[in-house]
Image 1 (cartoon, rainbow, N blue to C red):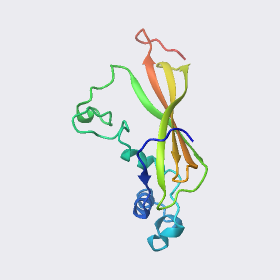
Image 2: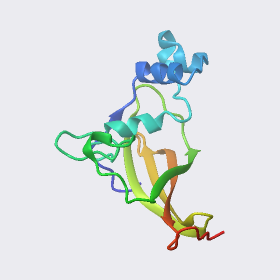
Image 3: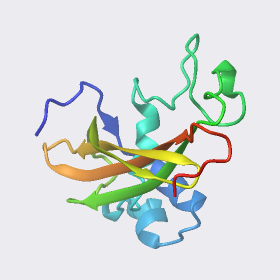
Length: 161
């Protein structure tokens, strides 16, 4: 187990139920609060927990520019003209189930980087890997985000296909 941050994210049955409702999954394993001791978290549930991490880049912080989404998310300057960053893929590895009452610690680190030529310019790919460990120190879930930033062609009308 890696050096874990001091922040522990407590998983609660109501969080699991609300997440399942939000994604439209009526599976009793996710929504039966009366049987919370048997409940498990839906597969992508751990993504919601990242919003409780103090340094999560997409979490708003008063007095600090926010990355966010939209044309002018809380005052953050838009990317340079012609540059685009996209969330390209999301992958999950499940090692042990996540249950109400679990306390998860998350660590995030960079993964691989690579590039490819695209029609509009060079595509720079990157991975961000988040590992969730439970209160017993067991690796519960690994989340791997793949993002891409597009560096536009140097000449108008040029393609790099």
